[in-house]
Length: 219
Image (tube, rainbow, N blue to C red; front, top):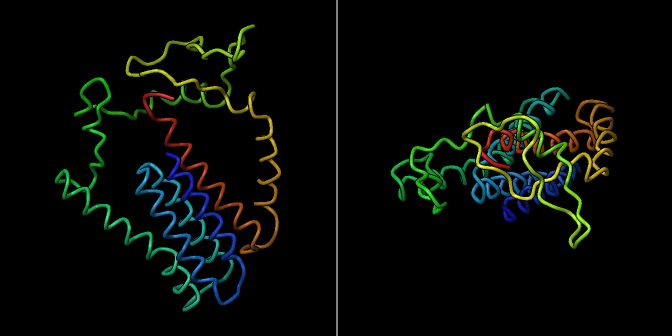
């Protein structure tokens, strides 16, 4: 998890540097694609965030009037390292499990058989929204002064496995309310402007990765 988050942040750094129209721009875009691919290799569910970044960048370039050779060069620089890592990862999965989509989750040592177990479902979304966004921590007079959040007032799905010391982001990290300012920055400015473009890509990466978490069988 830490490795995937590191490569996500590295990808955003490379993408920020690539907003400069200098000679190194294509190398920074390639670095972004490489970092996104490594994030997926470390944590396969980060594929959703990486794909969102690719879509946002392609849409931004097209909307800002980038066409022809400049568009092809930018798209190839960004997508080629990502695609190469994807091909290598698919080959590695096939060599291990005879399936390009099996990353080993069916064989995890998790206290029970994981073979054929569906770890994602739409019915998990409501309870995960509760835990990730609004769940309040229990308070205690004894160190460390907070307790594990219990189950919500509604019945969790039978397939839900529980949560690991999860507290809602909105009440416990009020600094996240400042993200509203980033959204305003993303909406402002002409199409293709450097700062809004980077903010849109960063928001797409975070939103897509977070959206996947909502379907998991635990928080």
